[in-house]
Image (cartoon, rainbow, N blue to C red; front, side):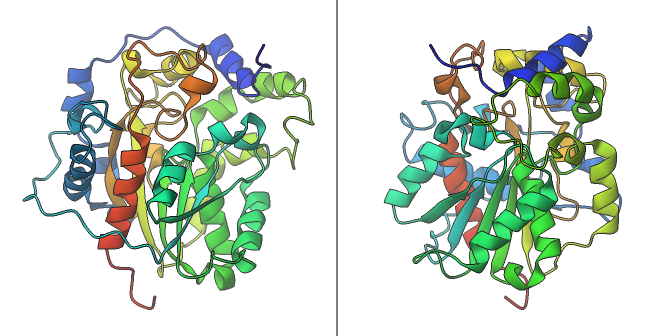
Length: 356
């Protein structure tokens, strides 16, 4: 019998507080302007959706019966009415000179290898020549603590991990990367690009609303399976804390930033995320079960797109590890290998800022 997952307390907390709300339809969500459209001139994003779609679709088309489950790529990537058009171009050339680090999100260390972002996809791409490693940060610590872990890894890289660095952060891992870039500029000089995949950039309304229930339940999780760290994970995900951090910290201009957000409809929400997804609907109809889509965007970054996926499906294979918690009405798994490859091809194509 599989042990109770440390993610269960979060699910229960959201379930205890979930509210009634009408459910959004695909047509409703597709008709809205992109969540990035409300950003100010100071935080406006570069719209890279059309080219990323071109790359993502090209990657999936090379193996239509494989990672993409024989579905058109539009099944995985929202095409909103404000997305610009672009003339198709050949796929970029892969750049294997980059050292790619995938940075884990909240509780990843508690759930084992299958909960690490893009775990199986990374293994396949590594076999194809990409230099990919994973930094598993503390699952229950705040971003300051985890930034130090990232700095330690990059300051003294193992043999074979030298060279320019691309950081890919999933969920809270994206916040930990941003904290690292600001706090450790000397070590961060190696970093040329940073990609946020469903990153908790602006925090989540769930953090403040479920904090009390969460703390009570998580205290029951065995420490040997899920080390407590500094215990600041909930505070580091509060919307007010994240918004203040963004307002008071300037990101290094030597790094190019990319953002991928996610939102979806009831048929693609994992059973365990469904209560939290409903709880977030009054805040924004476009959410992934943990984050509002607008809160998953790095201000001033290049917007790659909006995934038609829930928070887990965007990067981790919960459905095979926890088939009950990860069950969805639409059981087709998201093509995570194609997504990660498309991300790395986009990074290779877009030149790094001056000075790199």
